[in-house]
Image (cartoon, rainbow, N blue to C red; front, side, top):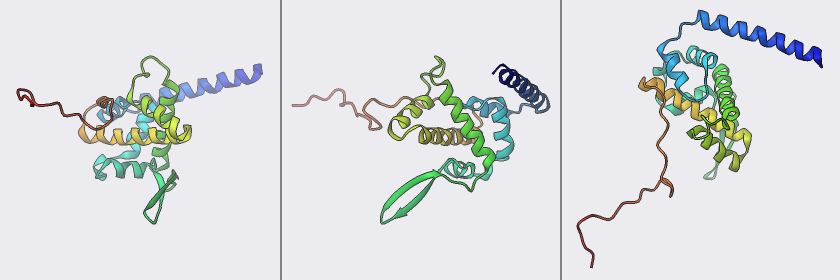
Length: 182
């Protein structure tokens, strides 16, 4: 067991040196900074995403980008019913890997005090309760992909979505002021 731990330390040292060389050689651009503002992707993953996306203008909407990245489920429809399956296989596998790894970062960090109240953590917990861990990681990967599209398209850093009304998406219209009902 001691030999295995020494081997693990050696491999971790190699990984650390490689990551340092990558960060030295890659100039951190504005797009990489924008991708890093999204919860999940850190330095190396944001570089992979930036290099694989190329120009975000190739995609007309977040849905098309998520499809290109492979973070959408397969669908089978018949007789008005739609069944969703696993993630599609025909995709950019490097992007798919990067977004799934970013989703796994969210899952690992969800109990940390800085992450506990983030939208992606709440989304993961809600989905995990209903559908299980694997589906929840996939939905987080898709959310991160769509958020990355929005961040790159707008050119602005990621902002947390506004909290929903406790009753759901329906808004309650307050009664008009100044009128007295009889």
